[in-house]
Image (tube, rainbow, N blue to C red; front, side, top):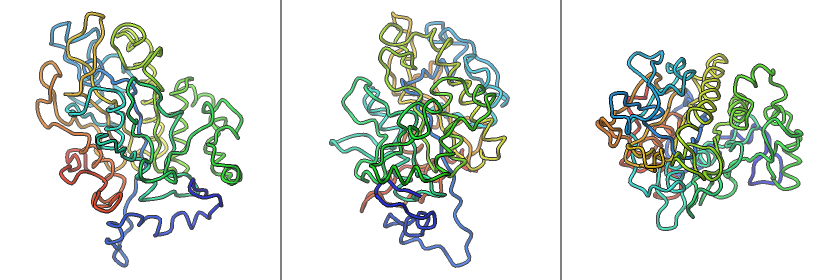
Length: 407
């Protein structure tokens, strides 16, 4: 095993010692009863749909609304009774029994990409210039690595410029660089093996390169061409495939960013005119890219018996305005949006909450990012009383896990 806070290799046994699990003070006060069954700990793959997908044109269609609200796409049936999604996701429609929908997410932060990224990847707003640690860094801090693998890997690269000057919430913040995500140094599956690995410093990199299990997990050349084709021969698709390989090898948390920016690149940021994307891009590029890779990920995890131990989440930083703008697109909207969440110990095939007739506001069961965070942590086996630092629990104490998703 290797750790990013050390220049010496450590054994897999050391990496899973009890003291690594009890890094937070609150956990130290919760000893396991003698003979008690060990807590079930799920892995998690978090897919960030960078750009803020429109709820109306993805997972919360309103087929009976006027065209300026409904948008250009039809709704289609899924293999879950009563659940309909946009026609841009024909494959996901066949795998709806492998995820659940949240249609009533909302937040009160600014309608800025950076702020939304931070909120959706930490469960807390960036305020008073204090950055909060990402889910993956919290997992690293509280649970540590296992099987000689890093605890948190970020693929393919961190999100860059999105128009603000706030952190994106994908780092360790005050937990320290020992819990920073493990980063690739190149395109997944496209470069020599050495370049799959992050820069850990000379001795740390040497230790990582000596880890045969790690090298094998990062080597997409070991996958049949047919499997790589099924995920899509693009950076996002191959990153989703790599995420499956990593959780299979023992990585606890993998973040996959669908895009790196919202400028001069086709993304979910559908304002309607350059340098942003149009609604046609949802149909022709962005939707198919997500549909192919995310459905392949769910199917692959299920076929390998991994879905029951792997939470898979598809999140955006906010939604889009209910009414189409003058440029034929939609602008930023934080009052109501959708997300995918399932796998691991969570229920699949469930719809949590609903929006009003224009998807402007939650109609019932509003869900906050803090509740989403509580659900992810509980699903991964992290007590919500665990502390990130003295007096600061992993989630706001007022936030409870989403009961409808707990099996």
